[in-house]
Image 1: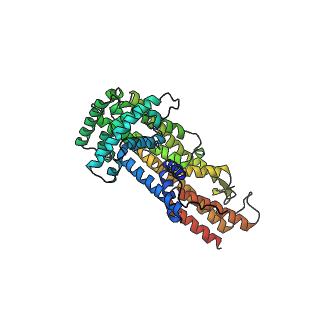
Image 2: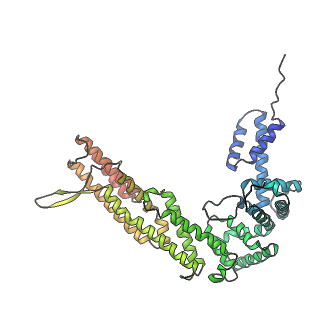
Image 3: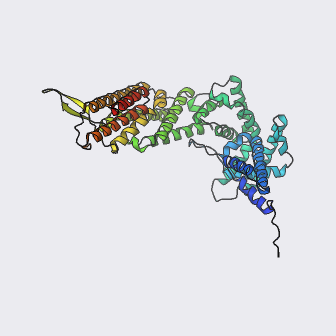
Length: 455
C-alpha cells in the first residue's frame, strides 16, 4: 500500500509552535533566522520566512506604539538601579492590547498624527490590561513587590502621551536644554502628578530608561525641580531617588576598582569603572551645588578622594612593577667604576612580567578618567618615566647583544640561544611601549632588534 504524500507546507500546529518560539527570539537572532529561511528552498522555508516577516512587522508596530516605554523592559547595562519590568510582559501586554483594538495596528505603519493617536490609545488599553488582566500578562510568581510593580507598569502606560512628547526633546538634555524645554518638562511633571500621585517619578523613570549615560539624569532632575540645584530641598523631594541611585552605583564601582592588586582586574572593566565614576563626579560638580558637609556633598567628596587615590596608587605602582619585571645588574667598567645594565636572563613566564603588562594596561586606560579627576599631569609624568626606562634598558640590551656581552647565568649556554632570548626580552619591552602609546619608541627598538638578528 502506498504511503500518503506528506504536505510540503507547515502544519497549523507547527505554525503555532514557531510563532510562539519567534515571539521569544531576540531581534538579532530573528534577523538571522529570516536570512537563513530566505536562503533555503521549499515551501516550508517560505512559510518560515513569512512568519519571521510577520513577527518583525509586529515588533516594529509595538515599538512605535509603546515608544519610549519599551526601554523599561530592558535592564540597564551600567548597573544603576532603575525601574524595569520582565521582558516577557512586553509581548504579552502588546498582544492583549491588540486583542481589544484589533484593527488599529496598520495605522502604525506610517508616521504622523494618526499614528500618535493610535499609539496613545493602545497604551491606554495596555494600562487597563495591567490593572484588570494582570494574571494574563504577569502570572503571580509569589514576589512581594509584584502588586506595586503592576501599578507602576499601569502608571507608566498612563503617562505614554507625556513620555512620547518629552522623548523628542531628550537629546537636548545631553547638552544645554533651552528655557522653553525646561518649562515644558516642569509642566509635564505637574500634569503627570495630576494623572497619578507617583506620576512625576514614573515619568522620570521612563526618561531615565532611555538615557545611555546615567549621569544625564542629574540635569533633568535639576531642571525638573522647582528649587533648581538647591540641595536641601531637592533631597526631600521625590526626585532625590535618582541622585541616590547614582551615588549608590558610584560607590559600588569604586569598591570594585579598589582591589589591591591591579593584575586581578580586567583592564577593560577597570577603565570602564573609573571613566564612569569620573563622568558622574564631573556631572555632580556641573549640575548640583553641593555643600561639602551635606550628606550628598560628603559622599561625593569621599568618592572623589577614593577615585583619585586609586588612580594615584595604580600609576605609582608601575615603576616598581617594571623594576621587578626587568631588573638591572651592577657590572664593573674600569677599575672601581661600575654601572647598571639590564639583566637579560629574565624569565618571560614569571609573574613579575604579567604584573608589569597588567600595570601598563591599567595606566594606559587612565587617560580619560585622569583628565576628568585632575590627575592627567601625574599620569603623563608616570608614563614618560616608564617609557624612558623601557626604551633606555632596551637600547642598552641591544648594545650588549651586539657586543656579545651576554654573560648571564639563567640563559642557555649557547651564545646564539642567549642572544635570541635577549632579543625576546627586548621585544617584550617594545610591546609595553606600544601599550603605553609610545609607538615611535617601540618601532625604534624593533628596528634595532631586527638589525641585531641579521648580524
